[in-house]
Length: 58
Image (tube, rainbow, N blue to C red; front, top):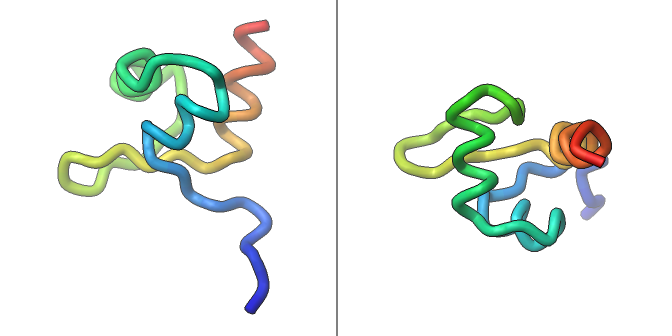
């Protein structure tokens, strides 16, 4: 089985990757600063969107 090139991450996983607090990631999603989809109560972020957000914040 192959690994998707652009996997979905939860806010917690994205926070670990970005070395940020999960609340920071969820707030960025709510403010549309970070492109994400919401499934129920869970924010899902594409790795490429997270990378772009990190680059923009740097």
